[in-house]
Image 1: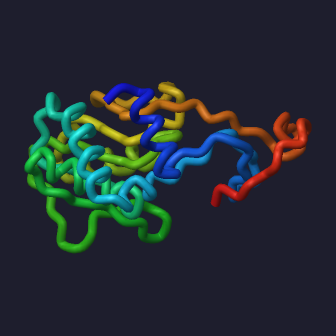
Image 2: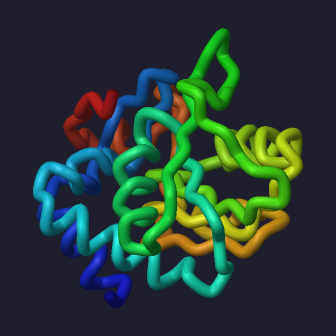
Length: 186
């Protein structure tokens, strides 16, 4: 799908909204992204899994790795489309870990799948897990790259949609200054 078609789909489902939003960090932002909304409809979920798989199949992965909670559904749908197993990491004591008896075979080529990427921190944590288990990160895919294309990794990276959100301190927000209504983005 083309970027415009994807953006239209994301906006139609409510996964992306443009406006003036308050983040829990206290900053104001001009885009709201909630990829979970894309997975309310099974057909949309399958479509996006197929799109992520098509953009990732050239990396020839053996397994898909995602981070709970947000990455599990896109990871699962991508794994399904590629015919691969899905493993996922969970937070414990503030760090991502592999639990639930999931095992990564030594030498496995791993495709990391995320819903949204801003700084790439969770991808870096999953990369450390893969390396610690003597696997190889074959590629990284996500639904939305919120860095505007600035995030960099040591493996091929594919995003369905790329946005550059503008963040402002509450006391220096031009949207506030213009009187634009403020919404909570969670």
